[in-house]
Image 1 (tube, rainbow, N blue to C red):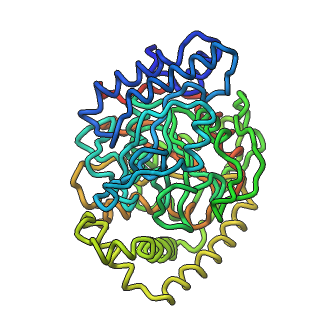
Image 2: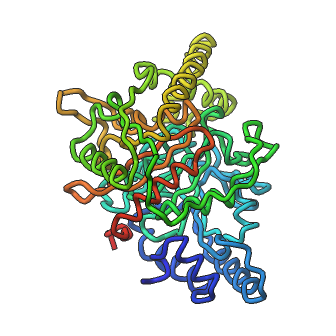
Length: 463
């Protein structure tokens, strides 16, 4: 196995035991980028020399006995919403073309402190306001969408162009591209990972999280980054925690909620079959399946849009008035729509969220987690605008992709997307596990146990 093919956990162990040097790993990943990036377009910028220097520094530290932990010497891609001192943070927009970060975001600073090797900035849908990341191509089929808005991060990890990456998630923007590219994506509890120095889309829905090859990899990244930061008003006062799951696969006693409504409505039959089979695997490992009724489903999409649209417009108020022509048309339309929403609309969405949180908390007292599809369909072809379901219903692609992921943003609960197979065209399918606030360890345990029963996943087959 070539170094760029190693998941984070295996690479970290090889570096710790000095079977692999950070320089070898960085060189291997950078060579992979040189080979695949022209076709995939996952990166905005690749800082190759900076990465090589960081890898050499990591190697010197490790040889001197100053090993910092499992991220030391590991190559990472960072979504182009996350500030890294001295580098551009364009947020995928001409509006921010001249912006250079004056300091590190909290998560970038923690990556640096852990000794991670920054490869560069990954592509995002403009200001994270979309679910496809135009210009970036799916790692399994370049004629299909990457998903968004963290499409560059997911494609980089899926194609071996980063050992792990960071993304952001406001309605599914970590989990959607992770599912469409066959990698693991974790949206933590709202406030668990600090957002200081991260460009906002919608402050009450935004999350930062890892995209990785395996569930255990996601746990390693979460362990390194999750700690209170007073500079983020939403940051939770949680202590440092080791989220790494144990090696066992026994899920005896775990109560897994299987939705009888909403999550399997208007879902591609191949997606449903793969997810239900994966749920059966959890049961075979000892979990007890419990049917659950998802509450307030008719209000989910209206509540999500009612919160996100006005918050996004408020963030962009000045530039929307001074340089509107610099925005892409799809994003500009959404921002202008936010100007038409009233304070009453926003307050009603806030009240709906409060009720939804209460109802979800009540439901989650009956189960330990919920298992459901991450997205209702696999990656559509680039340029495709709608999906037509078997009953003749026509749904916009972005509406379809966000429909199953947005409840976790509205309620703030953690959600983990895990690959569970492929459709007949060879495109990845994802299952999401949703749990109680600050119960990431439960999701990671279940996801890891499932993963251990499956064959090792290859990198995206496009070589």
